[in-house]
Amino acid sequence: MENIWGCSIVIDSDPPSRVWPVAKGAVFLEGICLECANLSGVNLSGVNLRDANLKSANLMGANLMGANLENADLRDAILMGADLRGALLGNAILKGADLSGAELFYANLENVDLSGIDLDGC
Image (tube, rainbow, N blue to C red; front, side):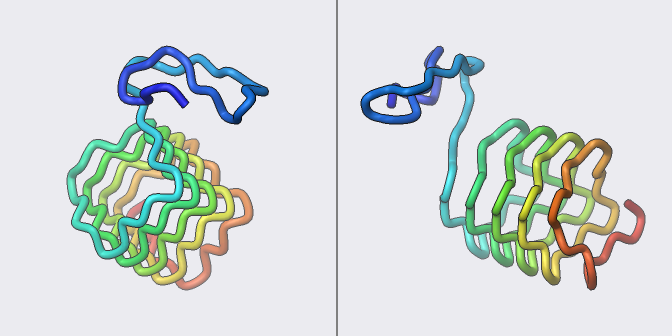
């Protein structure tokens, strides 16, 4: 894989089977462990956080617009006031998460169990 911090292509396998153009500065943090991290107010718009461990992370007021959070573990995460417009949350685990005041316009919540989640003010 080329340098993802400012490259023009990403190769997904060796030998390459697919090549995707990406925007300069695209960030891929797929599978990263950020459990209990304080990410309040951080700009993570468009970041690939697929399969990430964000359990109990503080994402209050974070910009996650267009971020890929598919299959991410967001159990007990604080997402109060977070911008999740257009975010991909398919199959994410949100049990116990606080989404009060979060913006979810056009967010993909396919196969997400929203029972017991605080959506007050969404």
